[in-house]
Length: 118
Image (tube, rainbow, N blue to C red; front, top):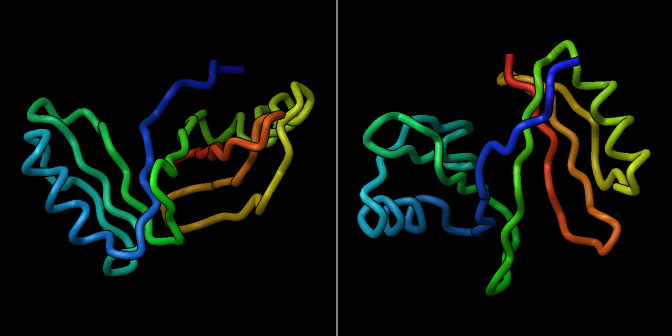
């Protein structure tokens, strides 16, 4: 099993385009991925490294979540490992065009996602 790795920080926003425009200019990032018009936008640095995800959804000041990523073949086992560590499944797992995803919460209720791109 390959190790889970930190992928990116995700901001939840009802206005993803406006937030992506702001962070692109503020942090010298550019768009490298977009899904379902404006549901999901990924910004990368000049070297092409993914740095910030912006996801359409309800938001409150300070609401962010981490994305963790693993290989598609390890998704189910990694999900079970995280649950075994105390994470709770909030939604999913589900399979999207870009891969698999499960929305989770850590033992204190902080949201994070497990993603397997493929």
